[in-house]
Length: 467
Image (cartoon, rainbow, N blue to C red):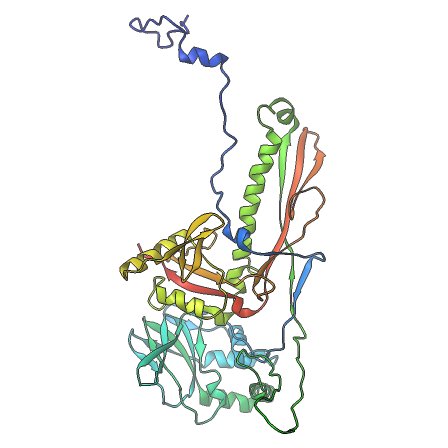
């Protein structure tokens, strides 16, 4: 029989007192509460101002806008041959809302010509005839203009899915007002103006649609594309003043509250017999709520309906000039909106930005955010969020936003006052006990996010993280 005071059983290790292993049988251990990996600061949930939605739906009313909108196109390929699916052409501003024969789109798609450009080559030159619609299937290019003294200016950065020239084909004898130069190797699809004009002649429905498109372009609008309000200023005497009214969108965007739910199961024997020194049900619920909040933040960023990455206006999505996130790119993001409240980026993206600042000899400031020190650019904090995805090509995105209803920004939507509510907008309801003596708890939270006007949210896309 083994001596408990000599658990090793060796002849040379005779103990003269009780061992620590034996003493532990009568001792009470000091325990931690259950720990959990994956709990993050969840800065988005903390920084968003939350608005109560009592009816389950939040409607965003805006002024009427004449901008026809656009979208990025998706492409397919067979080997090296790239094609644009006919249905993708609905995303072009010129063809948005056209309900004519699908054969028209098939004919258009089949007439695009594939062209390849090397890095540094010009796709179009300013001052030359604008006679093509260009679709950028793959690669990155810079849209260039001339400054006041003839110096070259970068007007925009184009990448996969972008397009230009669709408005030029409806005008005659016009010229490119800008140049487009390939930054990387580019695959481009081009549609000649003459081909488009021939199709217009063959389709009365398309001809009428183009006429309506031209008419919309002629309507007075302000710099934001909204229906203009007639005004007069600086006049004297008694001239007749122009009258008008503020028109609204007839089909405003509505956001319905989404839900994240799970069912927690706890055996009654566990809850009855093993509740000391910690309440088992309470600890199970605590960890479940933490996981549910992580999923809530993930949905607020990645949900295809209301998530910030998918809800950003196309005009507020920009590309990096060179690949990694540079101070120039961050300045470009900030310049497109007022009162930017904070940036949101993956921790690896923040590290990549820090490397670019170090390379230039710049040192971002540090600001206090709710008692935590955070890196900032131009005084705007850069907060970490690991819910922003990193692609297989090691690229990610940086989000910047203005928040609050009073500033026409981004807001969070939730419903409080729920039955069995344990936190604002989060409820835990006791369900039945099964025949196997298992208690079930329904854990629910209702939420969404709304973008009040387009310039409240901006995204820097295709950010290269490097090594």
